[in-house]
Image (tube, rainbow, N blue to C red; front, top):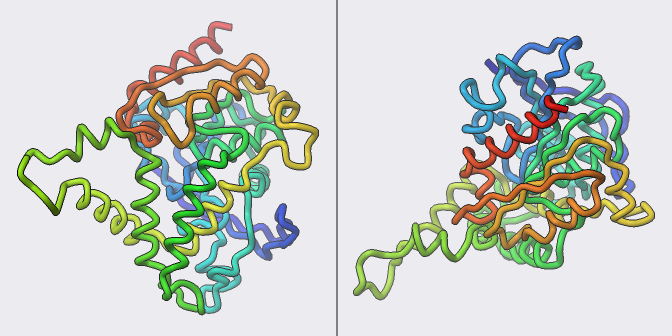
Length: 342
């Protein structure tokens, strides 16, 4: 069903920060059969701690019985630079024996887009029928759509923004402070920062969810409790869950990449940058999202030519894009149906 591969960019890959990565590795999954004669390529830009196996983490939208399947589409999802899941990152660059860890260079969503543009050319994809991304993935998709507008037909941006907000940066810095307060972080320790990562993820959950979501799912039935509340256990569980599958160095790297997101950087203005997008665009916001509030998606709609807006409701806040699959599927299906009618 899926095909996992690694692409190596043999030339030095120049980053926005001025550093470069030698022999950049990009891990990626493909689903379905690539036929250059068919305009059926779906390219997914994943979020902060996800991997390239989109069928694994976005079921209900991507899967054999879902809207995007390998029977009707050729689907590509590539792991971003700095991540934990196969691409060049803090634990394997320059080598796994001598990794850079906390000295891995600063990367940005624009770097992700440029790296995956090289991958697109390597695979031989001439056009992307639909580019889709949420959160950090949406930031990457925006950058790619600005830099290479002629190769993208349709664009779906979910719970993302044109420039990362001061509020979002503050949340990310609080998480990094938690990681760096763990004395095991750095100093050549490959397993360093684990306890800090547990705390960081607990902080992040507060920005990913909503008051109503916690009230409905984590309120204790027992009225006489004075300690050991359900919400406490939930925060610890979420922290441990991430720490068991991710690493603190990648988390710091990618959270800083999100902070660096600004489509107006080294361009005349944010609004002018967004006006370079030529793809048919659907922007989807989540009504209860405090990390990427609806106002940020409305800004995108107002500045991307002929963009359309869709809204979903979820008690799960920002994480609603991973949960409300029926609402997402309906919005995206209607968007693509309108393309066919035109």
